[in-house]
Every structure is written in structure tokens, then in C-alpha cells.
Image 1 (tube, protein in one colour):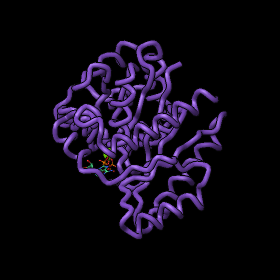
Image 2 (cartoon, rainbow, N blue to C red):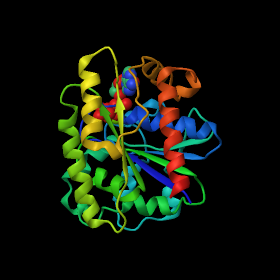
Image 3 (tube, rainbow, N blue to C red):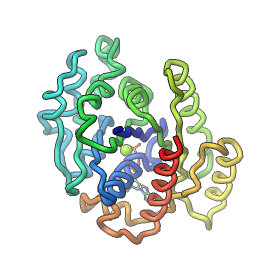
Image 4 (cartoon, rainbow, N blue to C red):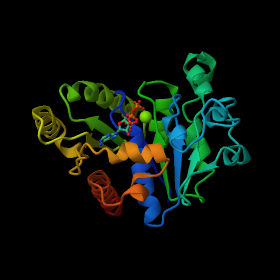
Amino acid sequence: MMQVWAVANQKGGVGKTTTAVTLAGLLAEVGYRVLLVDLDPHGSMTSYFRYDPDELEHSVYDLFEQVKVEQDQVRQLILDTSHDSIQLIPASTALATLERKAVAQEGMGLQVAKALRHLQADYDYVIMDSPPVLGVLMVNALAACNHLLVPVQTEFLALKGLERMVRTIEMINRARRNKLAYTIVPTFYDRRTQASVNSLRELHHHYADHVSNAVVPVDTKFRNASLKGLVPSSLDAGSRGVHAYARLLRTLLERRRQE
Ligand SMILES: Nc1ncnc2c1ncn2[C@@H]1O[C@H](COP(=O)(O)OP(=O)(O)OP(=O)(O)O)[C@@H](O)[C@H]1O
Ligand SMILES: [Mg+2]
């Protein structure tokens, strides 16, 4: 069964795109076929792989032009990336207009889920990146996934933004048949700073069952990888940051075996 993960947090700059791209790289390296879906109108993941969200003829936006989603239409959205086993459904800047189109939002909450159903046989894992706003795109991501990853920057007031995200998850869960499970991923951790140490402790205190044991450290290699358009594990498989994501992945895969 194809697994679908969403990466979301209503706070910006917490490592969402990095989490999606790094996990995709690690999954691809163990032989899985991976599809990344960029649901952020800023298109950072699309730009990561050297596509211009202003110039693309087709993007995830196409899925919102009509309620019905055809298989051919979905297939023509798929682009190759720098990694053989990773493909991408890109975002385009047009996505930004979506939230304002009231008509588009009515009954458009399952467009991405419908599209992915057509790709069941083509991929082992789908990872979706989402914008830091609760709107039709994030709702689509949450409705389409079977596991949610919530990166949280370990800094002063980290919990503030997270509370909003957890309320959103609870709201979504009232509408879902099976509860959406989520994993909080502490990011930008620097054990020399009190803010990092304290916020990690608070995360464990308030969200014990949901916090990943893998903590992602501050690591400049992530930026270097994005500048080269490579998944971080292709640039430097031995970096501390990649190690942390590999550890996170092991627990996610382990969890799946137990389900
Ligand atoms: N653990 C880390 N250590 C150092 N730099 C990081 C780390 N994770 C991400 N970065 C860098 O920080 C910046 C923001 O990360 P990223 O784009 O993944 O966040 P985001 O949550 O997707 O942001 P946005 O809300 O704008 O979409 C990027 O330049 C990225 O390369
Ligand atoms: Mg992002």
C-alpha cells in the first residue's frame, strides 16, 4: 500500500520543506519509489529541484480547476528530479489565488487525495509539503495523508505555534473516520543554547507520545544541499542532520510494521 505523509506546521521557517526533501532522499536510497508534492504557493520545494513556479505550464493547481480528477491529467503533472527514484508534482504561483476563490474551496478538500488514488501503483511513498497557512491546500494535505509530520523549531515560544497546529489536527480528526496520527519533529536544535534545551524539554512534557526521539540539529549542510538542488543524503550522507532524519525514518518505518 502506498504510504502518504504530509509535512505541516502553521509556523513558517521551521524546516518543513527540508524534512520532506531529506526523508524523500533517504527513502529513495533504500529503493522506494517516492513522489513529492509541493502544496505551498511559494513553491520552495519546486525551486529546490530547479523548476520555476512562475513558469510552469502544469502544476498541482490544475487539480483545482474542476471537481473531477482524471488519471491522465495527474500523470502529466509529474516531473523528474535530480534523484532517479524521486519525482515531483510542482507548485505554481497561481496556487496563491486558490484561497481567495470561494467556489474552488467548496467541495475541493479531497482533490489531492483523489489525484493520489490514481498513482497507487506507481509509488511506495508520497510526501507532501504544505504552506504555513490553514486553508484549502493544508486541508487537502491533511485529508490525503495517513501520517503527519510536524517540524517544530526548538526555540523560545516554540510551543505557541504548535498549539495552533494541534488544534487544527483535532478539528480535522473530528471529520475523519480514522484518526490522523502525527509525529512532532524537533528541528534547529543546538544543545549549547538554553532556548533549545528548554523547548525540547517542554515539548516532551506536553506532547510526550508524539515527540520524535530523533532531534534534528542545526546543520549548514541542508542549505548547501538546497543550493545544489540535491537531496541532503546525496550531498553528504554522513552529516549530523542526515543522521537525525535517518533515525526519524527508522522509527516511522518501525511504526508502520507494528500497525
Ligand atoms: N536543521 C537545520 N539546520 C540548519 N538549517 C536548516 C535546517 N533545516 C532547514 N534549514 C534551512 O533553513 C531554511 C528554512 O528551512 P525550510 O525551508 O525547510 O523551512 P520551511 O518550514 O519549509 O519554511 P516555509 O514556512 O518558508 O516554507 C532553509 O534555508 C533551510 O535550508
Ligand atoms: Mg517550506
